[in-house]
Image 1 (cartoon, rainbow, N blue to C red):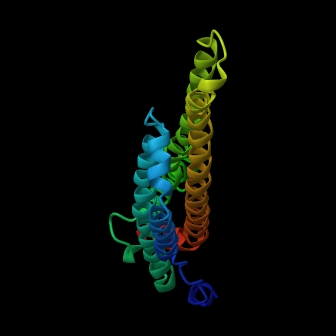
Image 2 (cartoon, rainbow, N blue to C red):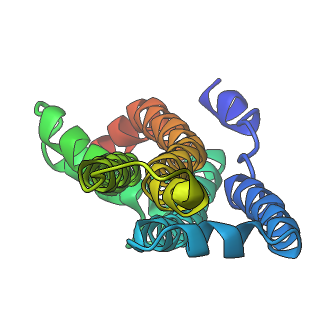
Length: 228
């Protein structure tokens, strides 16, 4: 019956290919915005450079998400192959599931410590990535504060109002307002798009842990029995 369950193991979701397709959509959108002159407008309208920092953080975090999705897919595929074969020995030494099952076999009465190790491998780096995702939003809010501060300083420097200088005055006032709005918008968009990738990674990692526990209940008793 256990062999029958392993034979019906679900296929591994193509997480890395999903990420590649998403990045392809990002690249096309970035190219289209560049053709329309949006990037030049954003960078030119933000003298503080916060918009550029947010974009760099987003690109680096997106590339990390791709590397992470590839590693999670590799770990899940190795787990499914071992589960289909019905033996934990089929896993390579660098497999997280192999370490989890070996720890269970060494101390079958204490399943908490091996599970904590597995969770650290599958979910640990994501906490830092979520922190980086929040940085984008905080940088956008920082740009908003700086922009309104510039706007307030420019208004405070006004001593009299001359109708002939209204155009120059309006241009100087909109500089601070543009910084406030553009940095906030870029931070929000980056936070949403990176959060979408990290949410998918977390969901895939949850499924990886669930599969390792499910197959571990079947494989570990066999391995411990053979050792006895």
